[in-house]
Length: 478
Image 1 (spheres, helix red, strand yellow):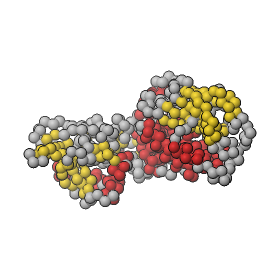
Image 2 (image 1 turned 60 degrees about the horizontal axis):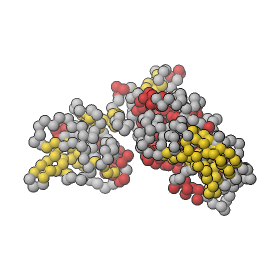
Image 3 (image 1 turned 90 degrees about the vertical axis):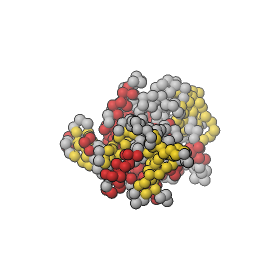
Image 4 (image 1 turned 90 degrees about the horizontal axis):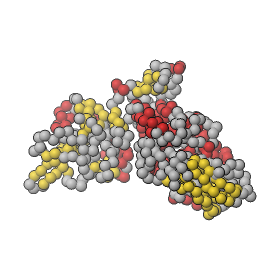
């Protein structure tokens, strides 16, 4: 059996249309025909039954689409597919899978669709898998073919090695189109780890945006140049280890009862350890202590100990970070006279927020309503959580009065002057605002909501906001 897929994405079409006939690429296989069935496995997690797979014929000289295509479907929830009655005048094709998939992190079926693709050389094979590696290599292969004039085989091999090297500083002998996330080989284990690392807690649309950006990054020079994204993914992966979430991910996949789940965990841990500059943990350095040297990490400066069974393990006594189990975001916090304060803006999607300069991920969300209010006349308001994570709540007037009384200038600086706020102030605004859980009521103005404005100097004052204003949120621990 043989399979292939079609990628209906604007960026990809632009790449194809951008191929120039003035400098045609020469590939072996001109005049070679393919007749038969193309099959394989399409996996993010496995694509679900009914997802589509399309094979587009590519010209043997230019690798441009010829317009000839063949359609197939995923035949079971293992992601297996077949494209029958394929008749190609070229051995080259583009496989594209589109549909719903099983989410490795949550264990659930996805709520949205994604698209993955794979280059295929059918001159001596009819089985081609579609996975994250075949998808990420696409743009880089095009650059190596168009600009470096490499052969198709050499371009694919080089792209694969570059991707694995960027994730794990390793090389593999296995071809991307042969790999499966359920294969107990070095390549299979590493591929499953890459799936977990890149998916994280993202929605399907966010995941595709990440893939497009990462594919473009790799394509230029074969190097993952976005250091901030690397660190963000490393912090997520470290959190999986610190809070025992890797075991839950394993259980989620095992519950599918599709196949045995290979040992992907060491590769996930290897990724964040490399990003923190910890180096190798093996029999030669058991008991060694090292600090996370990555200054952009939420775990920066934390000590890790080399354990003979578990690898690098965080010293939890130093842990001043909080994991929001609703979406996997990690927040630093600091204690000021007995009260724990988040030191970065909340990033929880409540469906009613705005993004500062269009960038919610870097700055946090601007909320129109943090979800809970109390008037000054109310005496028994409890500890309103609002949109804060479990165990945390929206600050009220007394919290900020306590902060004003007991926080030193050295406390205020890290609490309100971290990188995200400095960038916001650099845009030209005079202050940054944070919601309180309080409402001021008067006959003249009616209900006005309270917020704290923190100015460039670090001084802060209470102000009222009107309905519809969008303001940041910092949570305090109950």
